[in-house]
Length: 393
Image (cartoon, rainbow, N blue to C red):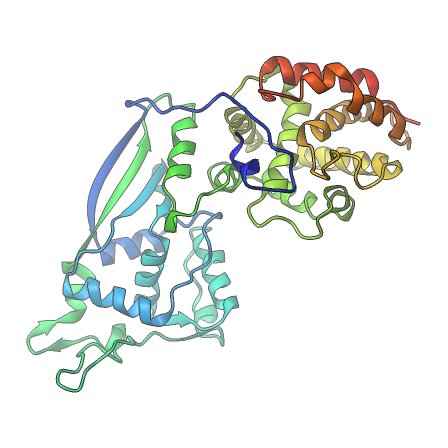
């Protein structure tokens, strides 16, 4: 079953029997013990990036302070997971909150507003250090450790920040924090095949912070981020598209962006389609990383014209009798219409609502929309029937 549709009541469920597997020799896991100074250096040089799917920094100062205290006094902390994309190019798979806490303590600033947390994500996701002008603004405050104390034995670290860490009772707190306490990291690297990102994709889907299951599209937005994927997010906000979906606001997990990605992938690469669908979309996303702006603009234009051609349809046109959006139906119509648009057959025409009704009741199309809907034969048949039946008025 497609992960992105499994628990979403607004889309008709689909099934794909194919799965992406990982062979034992696909990846290598390299353990390292880095001190805090080295980790911060990797971040400031842009070698470590927070993927775009990761949530904002959410820890409260009390939790962050306890973590810093654990580092200083040498308590064991959970390991960090990185993915090596290339030389000096690592994505943080798991451990964002811990890593950012260390960074913020060294910078001696802590977010006090949601905007401050957004600023953190904005810069660190791009591998950039947060500018001092941002950290010194109203969205941040001093990061002084906020630790509980009791009347008999006050906590010596409470109220201190990085610059005020000092040698207390012959104990060098700053030295311990910077150099003497190491944090275990596991760096995952795909070995072979070097041109297949299947293992990388599966690793991201299995290892993620807080045990929150990521949608495939959230993962793609980091592994294959491109101007084209960014443009899909913009297309997803078009009011005409939102009306067809019957949803005012975009899904935070990018479900509808995946629908658009899938539709464009079938438009451009249907003759290369092989299941599983997840792998097909990964490969298309990777290819799209090379799209120049002219290519992207042409696809945006096709999408705009397609939405214009849908103005003759009611907002439930791509839904079933249970009012659930049918992705396979939309995809087939999208490909059929966009091919006509590209061939110059549109010229201001609209999709015939009657032809869409004929397609929805077509026996061959219906059979190809049941069972393993992502099989080659099913996809091919749906696209064929849509191209034969859908016409303009």
